[in-house]
Length: 111
Image 1 (spheres, rainbow, N blue to C red):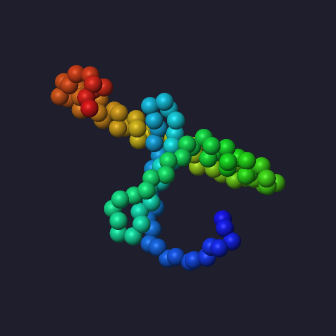
Image 2: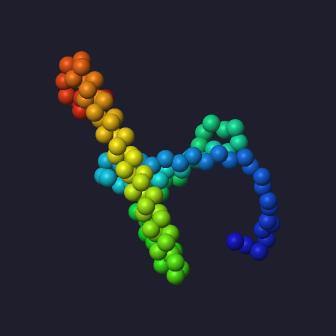
Image 3: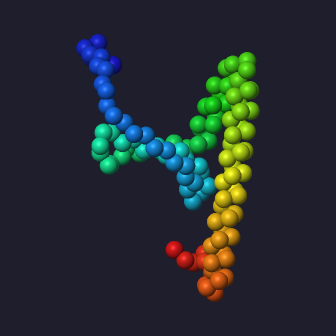
């Protein structure tokens, strides 16, 4: 930054939305969508999840009790992963049951 800049305080209404996504290669991403004001268009920020986890681990190593955070985060990951697996299983079973009910062929071919 140059020495000729001026600091400003801005108050801007911002809405931030997050989503997780796995691509075809199995890479997990954290997607963040930033909406400014009443604008329906967003700015997307897409971050690979693996480096995010590595950063959390690196920061935790800097503190004597950082392991507590890692245990807590890992516990929450496990809890949410179990819930997501259970829901995915129910959804998959539901799709298969509907296919069986209506004698639909291979549902993997349906888009």
